[in-house]
Image 1 (cartoon, rainbow, N blue to C red):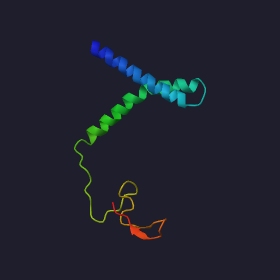
Image 2 (spheres, helix red, strand yellow):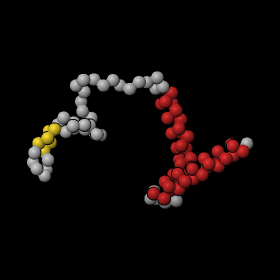
Image 3 (cartoon, rainbow, N blue to C red):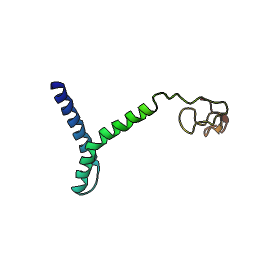
Image 4 (cartoon, rainbow, N blue to C red):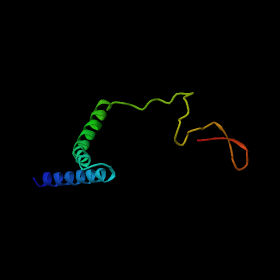
Length: 98
């Protein structure tokens, strides 16, 4: 009973903090913050259930294989790798290496 009470108190505190953060950042009348507070109670269990469902659905999933000739990523450390770029300071062209 003590563990359940502590867990419930921790959950209530985190939901209250989440709701307060959302209400402070939201413009509007009193009606709007009340709706934010109500949805703040629903969001964590719904998000957790969605995460668990996705994990369960894809529990046997494997990473996609890397194929030769695949397109370069559009962002991240390897973005633009292999493309010539001009150095604005010197004007020299160099090839980007990941």
